[in-house]
Length: 148
Image 1 (cartoon, rainbow, N blue to C red):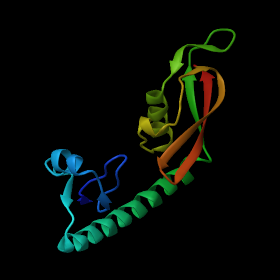
Image 2 (cartoon, helix red, strand yellow):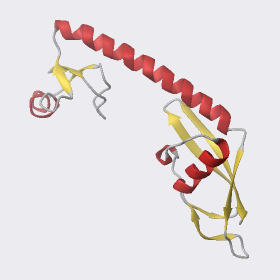
Image 3 (cartoon, rainbow, N blue to C red):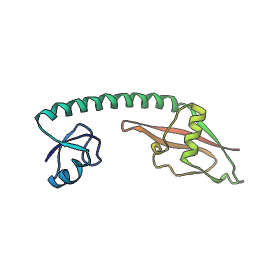
Image 4 (cartoon, rainbow, N blue to C red):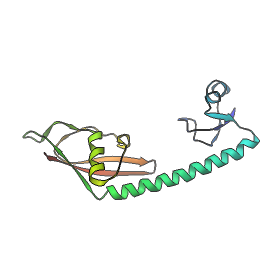
């Protein structure tokens, strides 16, 4: 059955896409929940306007992500941590700690879920954390953990 998606659905498509899904999935889940509408001739123009607005929003999001990346790449975020003689921290630096430090030092508000495969930092020194703000914008954030 051909449907027009009214919101992004993982594994199926994005808002405004015309997709072909199993009849049962369409009748029992997508249409009753309001996630999709049955594609007809008049709905195709509505789908095109949904795609245009999605593309405009995506371009704006990409531009803002690129500007944030340009601000954060050249700086080193310094985080104080209590450590033993060997340089191992008592505890760790978590993604929430990183986000708070970035906001305090660079004035940029990040979502901790945008940090990629980040394990808590457990030692003093320099560390790098990958950040993906947009599917097309990914960069490395430099972190320096100092005795504090």
